[in-house]
Length: 220
Image (cartoon, rainbow, N blue to C red; front, side, top):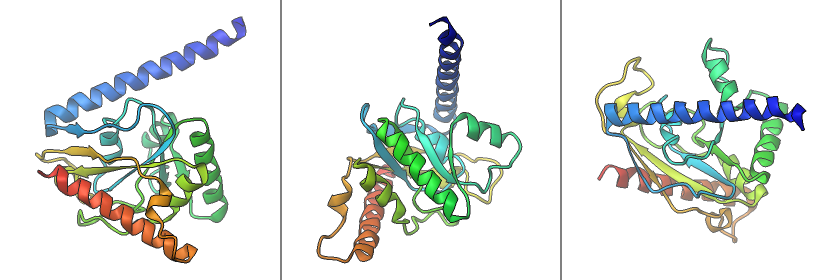
């Protein structure tokens, strides 16, 4: 039993560090951007959080929609940036590399997180929007949620593109809002009369429209 003490202490320290980091970021965002959240991610149970992606701020902004520690899925485009690499590792980000074996591993890792009752967060556009508009969604996010039997929770982020679009290196004044939508079961998005591939593409488009509505309502 004593052998477990160091491990428990490290877990408590890690949890405390994450709480402090999250609170500090949220306070800073409220001061700089009048950051606000409308709605919340479910407090219990596994789910996949999906959001539009217009800014490098987005992952940090999603920290305000739940106190639960989410596992983000992202490409490895910035994984080797000094300083950021440690941050990604600390936050246990699931990195997708450009080969099939890596994709299968990430898919398996996502399933493990969800089966353990965790929350996975993903930006299903596959990258940061260049013009702030919502791009077509990749249907893989539907497969992730469907296989685990968990709901999708859409989050519309508005104002982040104004504050810090991809081509800017320094933020500018903006009001940022995250609006959390109702949880959606994958089967609600898939038209049963369509073939599998067509159904997934249709489901991805329906999810995109749900996100677009949340983004639009966040502007009001």
